[in-house]
Length: 69
Image 1: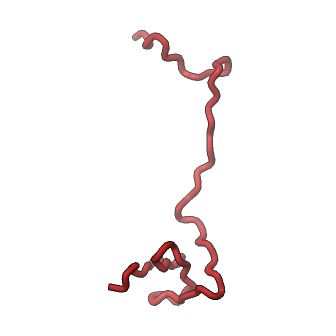
Image 2: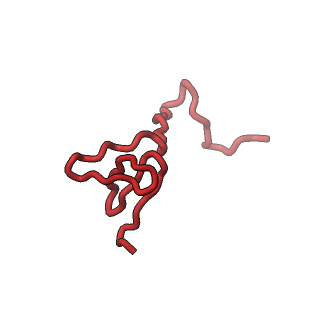
Image 3: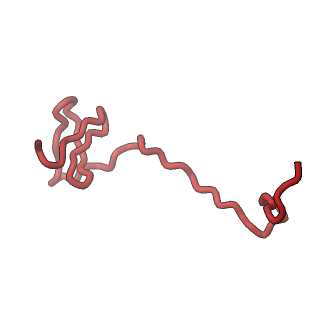
């Protein structure tokens, strides 16, 4: 099989350089809650942090609803 003309994979001698970025896990540690804006988790009692209009627990992943319904 012939490769398509003009489509050369990047190699050491290629003028194009691949950019590789480290992977950041979404399951990493949660940001610490500010002292004046803290809330305890209703399920496990851990300190929750606020993300937008929702409180999230870094321990059990419980989250509150944004509108209080």
